[in-house]
Image (cartoon, rainbow, N blue to C red):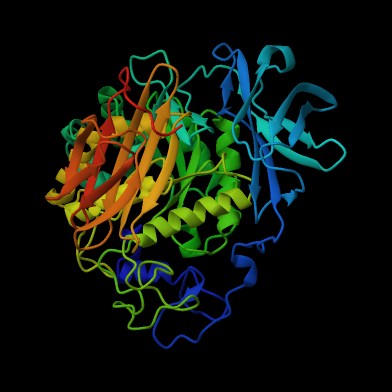
Length: 572
């Protein structure tokens, strides 16, 4: 995070520990000090992007719908089958989309334990398997092979791991829903798993949380559902006092080991002492290891040890670089955060080091961010990370969170975001696939705190409902200049139809976007949140055409009431 890069004598000394053989200070593999000669970026550090195929490719994959399943809680395991047609990943496909069928076998060892049929082009076909019939609870995952065959033609192979664990006798269980990328938790006082889209802040510990425990209560009252305390935590007694208060009020904990994750003795001690907490949401190993240039396998080594002690909670880390050993640092983590900080920066010239910033040189505070892109760089980073997940065969098992910029008046960032800009950061990340949001950092300005809290209190429950709904369909519409984006989540079944619409303007001036809605306008669209002075939705009374208008950096959130009898449904 930004505090690790403050220009002070102590931190510059720490930064100087990470050098190449010729003694240059580096960030994201690039020299950044004035006068440093250029270096060659290792080709292997860049994520391999396959060429675009002129012929269709079939990307076949299988995954458990939930990780992990728990003995005594889950009788069935659901497997998700995907047979997506792409131009970048998969094997050649000569059939007809929507007509050609694939016969699928799910295999463990030498035994076929389930069969199914999926049409080419389909995603999310579910196969239910009785767990106790084929598997015994184990701390070790089961290797599953999935084989899809087109009669008289090609065979497509995929593999996955089924986690079927015994009950956790000491602590909570957090599940990853691979249908949506969201987490499933049991809130305090509940016996059923419920989805959560985490929303909160990295939060200063020794000079904030630990000084007054009532701060935890205030954060809860502001509508946030998670706190990410920033280490070091001082004594265990002080740490536990804060964590106890978080547990009392129902705030989830992200436990951060950034300073210790390469010290496996320290990792073991901390995991053993924290894993039993009922409000533990996930482990966080490394903070920007790609920027610092830590050993590429260090995150995977740490996560392996953590899982051997506690397989019941996901593992996360944040990456700062646009493209520097992404696959190696992500390793087998379930969650990767991206911290793109574009507000107030000069993307082409470092105001700290007085050097130009290019793809191979310089540090401007926002790696490989584009001049004039602003908040679009957040969307771009989200898109790129999710695309890499698919190319790695992890489109479902790796989810991407956003770290909005909530700081300023330091080094590369001469000003704080406004409250409107902050909410726009959050909104644009949601429209580009973020399933969790934790901003750097609290305490922040009163304006940011107020705006962030307003979003949490007025709209976050509805956002969680739709983002975590496995049957919701998402569409994204952009204005001609990509300034205004509208994200629509639409859910329909035999008993209800409802929709969530988030509109965000990433530009400075008022602008509009034309879009299609799933309903004719009949007064059923209800604006539940507005950031800015202008936020209107003008829709046709006879068809699904609509125009949304928001002012500069404005955000609006609309929901549609459940379908009433006789209301025309315009989108299947």
